[in-house]
Image (spheres, one colour):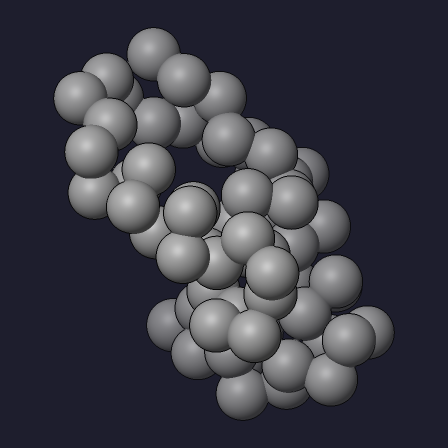
Length: 62
């Protein structure tokens, strides 16, 4: 089981992030279950909003 924190989610969701390609490849290749917490989800949504990624943050709430 792998715990994924805010920076990884942000990198995955934002294509212009410098680590996006590497993160996306890692998500495709990882064989273990991925977990996170509600605090990390909240922090990720806040980070998306603060960095101008409003459409991504509202989409993830659905």
